[in-house]
Amino acid sequence: MKVPQMDRVNEVHTDVCVVGAGPAGLALTLMLLRSGVRVALLERSTALRRDFHGEILQPGGQRVLGDLGVLDAAAGRGACSLRGFQVVQDERLLLDVDYRRLTPPYDRLLALPQRHLLLELFAACRALPGFTPLEGYRLSALLRDGEAACGAVAQHGTGHTATVRARVVVGADGRYSRTRMLAGIDAGRTEAFDQDVVWFTLPAPHAATGQVRVHRTARGALLVHDTYPGRLRIGWTLPHRSWNKIAARGIDAIRRELTDALPQFADLFREHPPALADLKLLDVFAAQATEWVRDGLMLVGDSAHTHGPIGAQGINLALQDAAAAHPVLLEAVRTGDARRTALLPYEVRRRPAAAAVHRMQRLQAKALLGRGGPVTTRLRAHAAPLILRSRIGERITRKIAYGTDPVGVRRDLFIPRGTSDRAPSGVRG
Image (cartoon, rainbow, N blue to C red; front, side, top):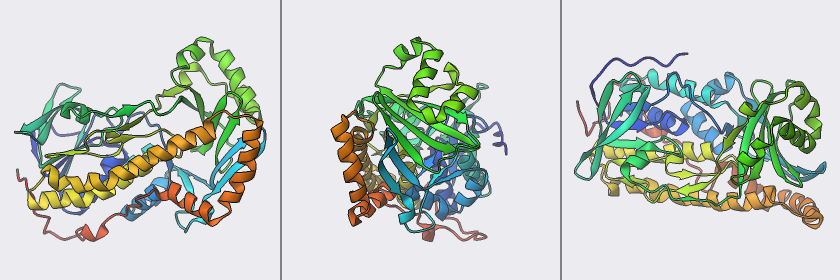
């Protein structure tokens, strides 16, 4: 399915302008449209041709998508169901977190290519009135009424400019958010982790593991999980900012090191040796923006808070942010009050959840990826199973799966299909 080309418009009047068609931006757009709110969506890529990093969906994010009715269709395009995650060292199982202990239907991890998810969300948005997709438009300026944001100016690759006037602008444009930058909000970046991750995939039609596995080695750790279609996705953790020196050694040396670290996949490395261009570096850092809301402005997902890949929490948090932002934005549009005080309940609710994940990931990085001697390994091997088989282990699994604030979609705020009376808007064109 192709994303439709936009008509050449000069100015759009809408209720909410969402910047960024990632999971958070599209899920929030769909919730607002189903509640009768008009939404203009700015996305700088065309036909959703964009780089994707995370694809593991935790049960909390799956529930949001299930509530929206898009999860099954997205997974139907191709996905891998994973039982949980394990930590392995020297063929010894150190940790085994089994998601089948959770309540169905969200008793698994799901490796779902982001493109499959975004295509389903976009199709659901297109089917609703009030949706104005602006594909191929890059945010160039925020419109202001005094100190309040009241819209955006965006530039198409062809040179065409579109002006969007809205009650609220929502920045859902990722870890390097242009919305946040133009608003002058500090990203709050911290070097909380001492690892970066290099990602790549290998064809592996007969090597599915059914798990997310962390393979600890003397030099670090590698994350391995099944991905669609019939491939293994591998994340090679490296000391922070060491990639340039490692890449300078050449691809042959890198292949030897990877094969030594994952000897069980030696045949795959030999049959499908990765090229240097296949290895994609992810700069791993933590960030908490100093402000998530201002008059007429809201940040969601990675725009507000950025996390490392450990525990697969990024998409989960972004989708839950969207669910928490939905009723707050709906009230702002209905009342015509988009001041910071009206938007603040969203930040008050979600900032602690993001901070909790930051704390958890720092602990996980030390426990799962940190280097330890044989005594540490033996302690992990004996203590972890005892904890995970207990009630404490069940609570830990649920907290990883749903977070500290397991937000659900407010479907009671949706307008039934066929209802002509749309929600009153604070902005009319």
